[in-house]
Image 1 (cartoon, helix red, strand yellow):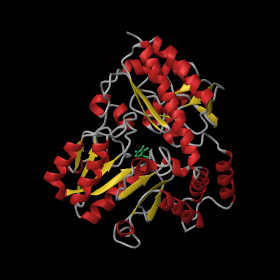
Image 2: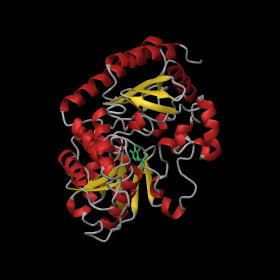
Image 3: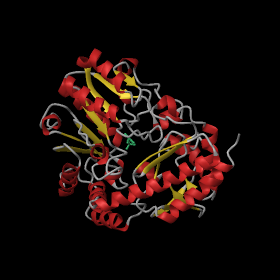
Image 4: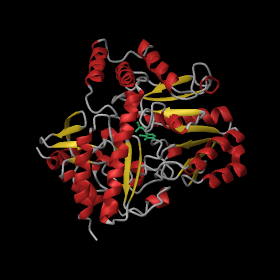
Amino acid sequence: MTDADLMEQARRVLVGGVNSPVRAYHAVGGVPVFVARGSGAEIWSVDGTRYLDCVGSWGTALLGHADPDVVAAVVRAARDGLSFGAPTPGETELARRLVERVPGIERVRLVSSGTEATLSAIRLARAVTGRDGLIKFAGGYHGHGDSLLVEAGSGALTGGHPSSPGVPAELARLTRVLPYNDAAALRDLLDREGERIGAVIVEIVAGNMGCVPPHPDFLAALTEATRARGVRLIADEVMTGFRVGPQGALGRYGLSADLVTLGKIIGGGLPLGALAGRASDLDALAPVGPVYQAGTLSGNPLSVASGVATLDKLGDRGVYQLLEERTDRLANGLEALIRETGIEATVHHVPGMWSVFFCTPPVDNLTDVRRSRVEHFRHFFHHLKTQGILLPPSPYESAFLSLAHEDHHIDRILEAARQALRTLPA
Ligand SMILES: *Cc1c(COP(=O)(O)O)cnc(C)c1O
């Protein structure tokens, strides 16, 4: 069966044929690849076509697909039962690893997705500060919680609904949106309205409008201006945690936050998220404190086994050095091709994440990102797909490299990119 046949069948019973919008390929046209299996840096479609995968389950698959140690740990756990709704030692094992490696955290609450982590973090921040206001940045995506679907990135941006219908206006009004990388705007708003703001939530490296790294003055404002006003800084590291370095984006830039949200890599491919912070804040959560938060499948034994096995393979700093070298090599290669072809494009990257924007620099915020020529991205995407390389099917999603992407894979991406850039439509 072809992808088109499978999509036709899926559309009859699943909304738009998919369970998460960007998977439907609306932004690039065509039909999605239906995946049969994956191994290392590659995936195979149901019809047998092999692709080099630069989606990596949207940043989850840092070790590559079907890592043998992770799969073995999940199989071992499964034999003992799938879910109990009672404490298991694996939850402590995972939480201990997070406390040891994520800067400034003492307590962890495990949940089942990034969305759950961020919406619980916001409830907690509002409760401990007694303030309902929230600041986010345009193009930042923090899951699909109501307070966060205001000028959101990722699929909300790709689908043209960055602020979703169905979110009550009264709630959306509590969410203030500022341009990413704009230190002055953040300081101004906190100066004027800081006493009504409970939290600032930020992707320290923006990854859901494509990859947009932070400026040093923006990082300084995030930490200083929030601290001065008693506002909780929530570092949403669902994408960057354990990817851009052994201590995530916080470690990479030498920062600390009040609350940290995690997901994707920490579950090693199974559903798992976490919120974490100082004991004095986290202990406001039930059962110690009054802020309610719960989950039947929270700390699921399979997810936790997968997460522990994954983090244990990421314990050695050498893996991050390798990831950084390879991502640098890819980005430098792409920049050389852009110079060679004279195309108007900007490449951004941090270890394990990269984006090509089809516009001139600077690309520092959502307004800049929107200058990127969508028809050029579509050509780039489909050209690479024809060459057996799969990118995220949206100009507003970061692409990824995993530890299974070797130098010869990067050479293949660069060769396909050279042809794609040479044949861009006028
Ligand atoms: C993916 C992502 C989320 C949402 O996580 P889900 O597991 O999809 O709910 C939240 N924040 C960021 C930064 C993300 O990249």
